[in-house]
Image (cartoon, one colour):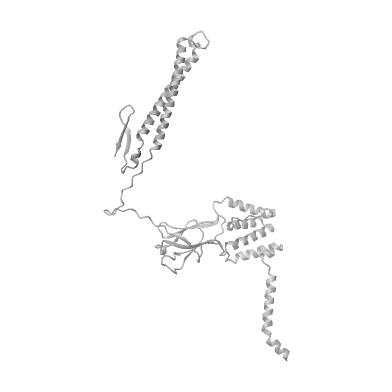
Length: 365
């Protein structure tokens, strides 16, 4: 009887101890994906990793670790296509990930193909939010080259510093698209918005996120710059500030270059003219170096050179004269230093006119 009473008294302690022992034994019997992969059970590791991803509620860092394990398991099982897809998803979550060179070829090959895919993309997995020009909608642009995102979630409210303490977030959940417009009429009076933006996969995992409910990001609302108004007529004032005059230094430099080019051209023309005169004297005197029985045959080379030097001298004289005239005009049109500080700038206008140059200029004050 005493033994039966003792058993009845301690029955609940024995039952709880047995239950704890049973749960511990079951936990040891259910291996983790990492343990299964380390033991070479690649098919079990792949199944457990896929189930963990499908359970959802994982953030970007956790997903990157899971996709790395999934890619390695696919590669170890010889599924090249699935391994490449998993490596592509891994690099979308962790662009800085690098696989060691010591890894086997069946693992490095799909990894390198995934890197090749991302090397051709202009941007990675990301999203940007802005406010429309009329401040009635939020504009969300999504970049998802790998096609991982199933939903875009935006939570937004007016900034807490704008006397809206305790205001709850307004949430938008939409399929990803380029240029999502989400209405924000209720927040139109805000100067600054607080928001969190996330890209979710089909299982609810957060592939990418900016801001949170505890630490939201700030989004300034662009306001239009007021237009200056004329108080008398209540119309936009037509007055605009005068454009500043250019500095005279470039004019002086251009004029000096034109004068130098003109002087050089005239000097070269003088040399060509002198050479032409010497050749013409040899032609007239018949003291040429050619061979033949007539002056035309003996002086044929001198005659050709006379024509060439005469043409060159004429062209160089024309170029020199044009350069000198250009230098004079640039110097005349150059603004003076006093004009830079004058309250009203004068204007110089040149049009066709009488005279040798056919040019007439007027100066207005």
